[in-house]
Image (cartoon, rainbow, N blue to C red):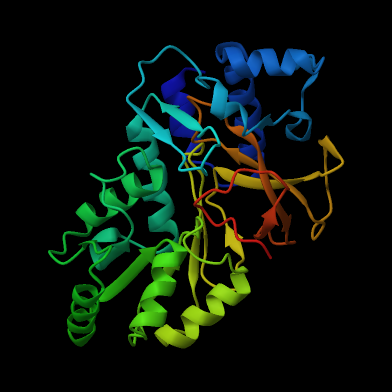
Length: 330
């Protein structure tokens, strides 16, 4: 199956059989056309011809993105997304050869969980695109803001008073409002201004980044709910190395779009996956939209999957890179 046909199929997945078959096709495509992933599988002594079920597919450790160019196929690179990382840690780099695929993925996800961006005033407590051009999160936010077609949608970092006035007016006009931001910026807003954001969708994207004392998700959400007068805090789970996101509408339980799945690995044996729900282990991510890079990534996060496929992020392994996408220690 050609790349374009495979891409179309990824976004038409609607049942387990489709997902299973597409996973195996993507795996074979990436094994054949991704040098780093090919060599990684060979180094494990795996014979790809014997990998007939998704649970046998090896997951590439996310750390490989720090020191290798992880790319499938020969398309030219359009953009390099780079993780913010921490001081002294080599950032991960995601070489993206088809930005339209990323846009297709995050737009389909947003529509699935929230509806059309055009329905919202979208305000972001994030660095603007010009400040953080290499951030996949900022790229997504910038795109959604432009698509909202609301003249007051935009980046409001360091402009809290203007943000509060904008939201107050939009609430009076009965507009749907989405406020998304990194955790420390939302906490600053909550503790310094404590505005009434009742009726507003408040979405945190993680990331204290040494700016404040790191909080558990429970502590963070408790502060934000009380100070901002909202009943729940939404969350986005994504990574520089992915092209898809999962969303939580409250209680820290995330759900994936149909082309993305979370599986949990045994922390003592990274090649063994847990079959049963509610067991804590390493988070492995299947992101079929990441077809031109690697769709099978073993992260440094700890989590567990629920019976219905939802998942929780419980923290991270020791010595893992602290990232800006929902890596809060529980």
